[in-house]
Image (cartoon, rainbow, N blue to C red):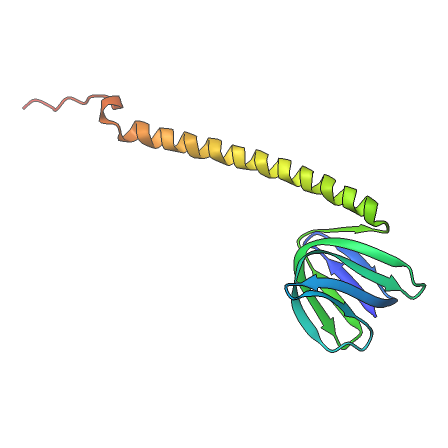
Length: 141
């Protein structure tokens, strides 16, 4: 079988000689072997495991996604994020580091958005407060 794991920015995994794939959806963990029936499912955040023809197990941590089996020969996974590894301990550390980095970036972006919102609200309040507007005298007749 062929396994393809794709993110919006890269092909994280493209393996030609896969004997078994294990993933997890809302119903639990499941396995896929060659000649599997066509399948389409939504994946949970999980670690997808696969074995190649030399019986070497590899891993990819994914942040949810969609898995499709075509003609029992191709397993395709589309996901937002994927971290590939050969060792579960190292993969765990890589995923935690990536999650920490992403969390910091999200917090920074959120703080920037809040600053912009507050600046916009202050501007609107200044405009709407009549006391802050310059007084315009009516022309005399």
